[in-house]
Image (cartoon, rainbow, N blue to C red):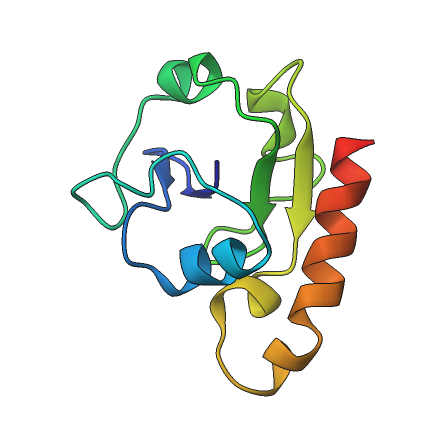
Length: 108
């Protein structure tokens, strides 16, 4: 699951660049089949989905260690670089390594 905003909570949905990046890393995000690209989902529903990892990028919303993970008690959270997840261009060269390391660390 990949929240991209809070107030209201929004997540990656279908047909997004970030969703494609994650898919290439072998990650399935829970709302990839949602009819909206960035659906609004109540935080209670996000928690109830019980994902393996909550991926919290630092953009477009700047999730931090103090602002984001507390909304998902008991769930593993990976704080990741939004530049590596949402930008095309030179940052994609290192994106698989940087994102992969963050996801692996969250799963430990």
